[in-house]
Amino acid sequence: MFETTQSKKIDKILTQKTKKEMSSRLPSLNLRLGDFQAHKQIDNENEISNVLVRTDSEMKKYTITLTITDREIGTAEIEVEGQVLKIPTYQLRVTDDKTEEIRDFQVIRDFPKMKKKEIKKSWLSFLGISWFDSENYFYENVSFEPKYNEIEKFQLVKHRHLEENQLVYELQNAENKVIVFSGSIPKLNNKSEKNPYFWIIDHVEGQSFIGDILYREKFLKLTPQIELLLIKRKKTPKNIESNNKGEIQRIIYI
Image (cartoon, rainbow, N blue to C red; front, side, top):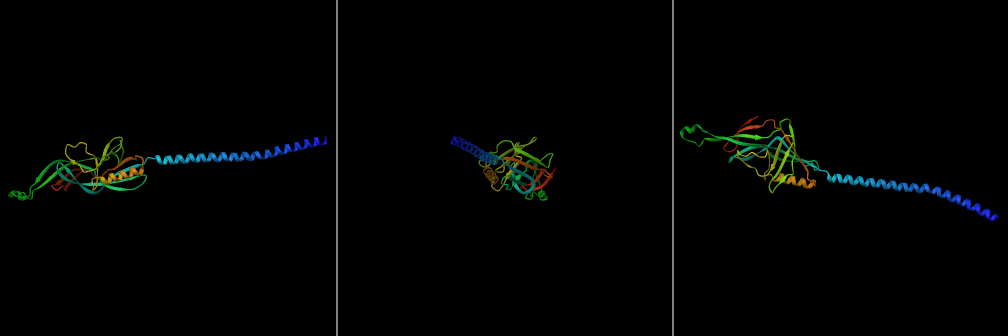
């Protein structure tokens, strides 16, 4: 009888002790489980964040900016109706918003059309000597300038057109469309109606500009956006007079 009663007491004590120990252990187990779940959630969030940042960086589309300024930096010889004419060139600055590299080129902003040719006789012509007579050529200039603002902005209409030795950009804004061309200098005539407004030149017929653009496109990976900033000139040539060597003798501005 005593043993039975004693055994029951021992079982009761053990049962209570076991419950107490289990009770004391469970919170600790739950805490560890909670920490594991919390860390797992944080790791997942970091992983998602890293993926989003990496994807955003890789998919970002960069912009190449062409800025045509009003600064004269050189001259170029063009041919108009078979006659050579030396006209000023202007600064074209190229950069992009990733490499931020800057390069300058020359661009033609004027496309004269020949109006007439005159022979200016010297006083010796009265003696039948024409050696000192001179030919002068008169041109009417065709150019494009911003109408309302000092700087006009254009965006690329379609993909750029690239051939072996030339690159063409067609750009527009809400009101105007312009063409930027890089390649050999054209031979103009008075029947030309679709001459590019801006002709990029260098000592190798525009090839250094084309090479610069292809380098930037390769470095930027995705096909970049193209924008043109055109700065208005303070005075625009309207009429040009030159001698038979193509040297400008007089310019009438507007």
